[in-house]
Each structure stands twice: as C-alpha cells, then as structure tokens.
Amino acid sequence: YLITAAIFTVGLLGYAFYISFTDLSASFAAANAQFVGLENYVRAFSDTLFLAALGNAFWYFVIVTFFQTIGAMLLAVLLNAKLKGMQFFRTLLYSPSVASSIVMSLIFLWLYLPTGFINFALGTDIPWLTTPTRIFAPFWDAVGLGDSIPAFFQGPSVAWVAIMLLAIFTTIPTFMVMFLTALQDVPGYVYEAAAIDGATGAKAFWYITMPLLRPVIALVAILGTIGTFQVFDQVAILTKGGPLNTTLTPAYLIYIKTLGSGTQPEAGFAAAMAFILAFVIVAITLIQRRLIEQE
Image (cartoon, rainbow, N blue to C red; front, side, top):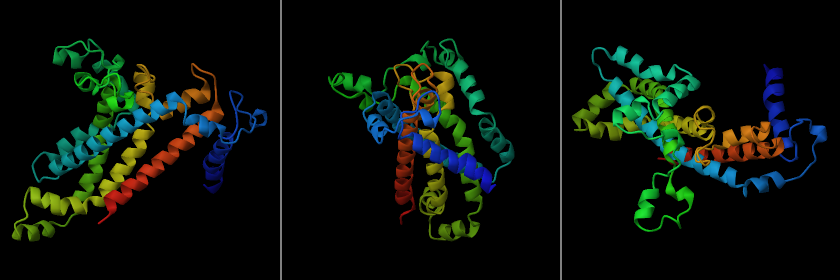
C-alpha cells in the first residue's frame, strides 16, 4: 500500500507541482519543458477564463451546498419519524444516489430538452441548457444598472442553475443518510427531558437537534464544498462549459487545458490552476470549520 501511495499519489502530486512551474505542453515529457517560475500562477489570476470559472464555481458552491445541506437535514428528520412504511420511503429517496453521475446527467439532459418533460409540464419551450441569461440580470435591468454591473454580480446563468438543480437532486440522498444516522444516535431521553421544560417541536429541533448535529453539518458542508468546486461530469456531458462560458468550471478548464481539447495543450498552466483551486478549497473548508464548530 505504501509503495502504491508513494507512486500514484505522492509521486504524481509532486510531479504535478513541479510542472506547474514549467511551460510543459502536449509532450508531457518534463525534459522538454522550460522552468518559468511563478509565471503560470501569475497568468492564472489574469486569465479571463479561469476567473470566470472560479466565479461560476463560487455561485455553484454557495447555492448547491446550502440547499443540499438543508434539504438533506429536513429529509432525514422526516424519515426519522416512527411511522409505518419508512423503510420504503428511505429506499425510494436514496435511489437517485445509486445511479452514476453520468446516468443522472443523461436523464436530466432529456428532461431539459425544449421538447422534454419539464417544458411539457410547465407549458414552455425554454432551452434550459443553452440559455446564458443570468438570473439577476432582469433585476439590474429594471433599476437601470444592467450594463454597469459585472457579470459575476448578475448571478449564475439559467443553464448553470439547471445543472445546480441536478446536483442538488442527486447529492441530497447521500447526505440525508449521514444526517439520519446521526439523528438515530441521539438518545431519546434528551428530548424527553427537554419536553418537561417545554422544549418541543421547533424549539427542540433548534436547541437540541441542531447543536447535536453540528459535527455532521460540518462534515456535509465540507464534503459538499469539495464536490462543488470539483464538479466536472455534469458540465462535460451537458454543456461543455457553454453557453458563453457561463457553466465553465475550474476542473473542466484544467481538463481541456491539459489535454488540449479544442485549444493548445498547456499542462504546466493547467497544473498551476489545479493547485490554486486546491488552495481555494482548503481555505474555504477551514473557514467553514471555524464558523460551524465554534461555540
């Protein structure tokens, strides 16, 4: 195990870190690469595509992490009730997590078609995955500031929100199981003692359940953050970063820059972007732990 980890984890990580300081391109031969120092890192912070990808990832992180955490917690509370047939509903609600992300993406690709079920149910013909309009743009236009507001502050695009709904739908069941396990570990006498003092219903949930779930909330938020910043499958299958780069993510940009999919291969530059992304993820998770786990 140690030999395998040293070669395929530590070794490759060290090699990637090294090539992030070179101009390595398509050959993937380090001997042919020239050392460029911090040039790739400096370039990344001025690259419009990478900055746009980070902006998209930020909106994805904020919206998806919030709703998947809240949704998973609420579903777990409902499924923790002592009612008949709960085993069936637990299995039913967990089923979206059983399928792979590729399968779920293809299902939603069909649902989002202009002639798909969603438009049929709504009575519309919206091209969900090809609409670059940002969701806050109508508001800024209404107040006369549409042209002066940067794209980031106009919110995610319609296409990006469609992919967010896919992610929320498919990730809630997994985190729901974590919350359900934590809820079942809470001793019943805690709620009985609280009920004597008049803490029932919403009060019991807020003052007893929530504090006891704090470690799980931190875990779910951190895992959700890592997943949102590394989103790749859904983008590669549904939009390939379009329309107008409104669904472009750092992971997908690193992929196409490394392999030269539709562009010049720049493995060194892609490695630098990968380590910047890793730093962003670590920084945000540390902030989350401090905020969630504090007294």
